[in-house]
Length: 120
Image 1 (cartoon, rainbow, N blue to C red):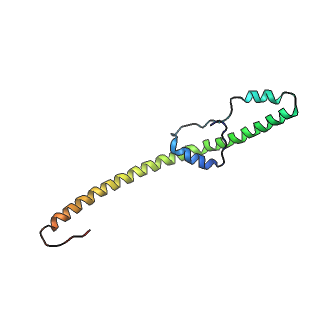
Image 2 (image 1 turned 90 degrees about the vertical axis):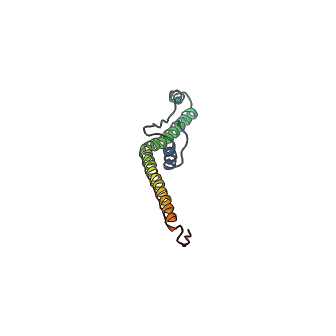
Image 3 (image 1 turned 30 degrees about the horizontal axis):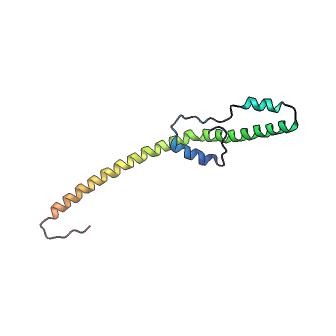
């Protein structure tokens, strides 16, 4: 994730929980931090101030991603439970549809020839 800016960690974690598998790690940060350190030690107040602001901003963004990473395992487990529950409900609905069709067929056969009209 690098240092992408996040406005709402919870929303990001909820979205990613739909996509990522359990055990997936969120990584954040920059690979060029040593360059920042070198720039910060160069002569000039402007360079040092810019580097300090940049380091602060990177730290702030990483904190957001670390929060996403903290929430993500729980949300992924929740999604897994939801999928299992949905699968169970779908199986129950399929079973009830079959039972209903069988009962309707039996009711139709028992009504044949007796002069009654069944309206559904």
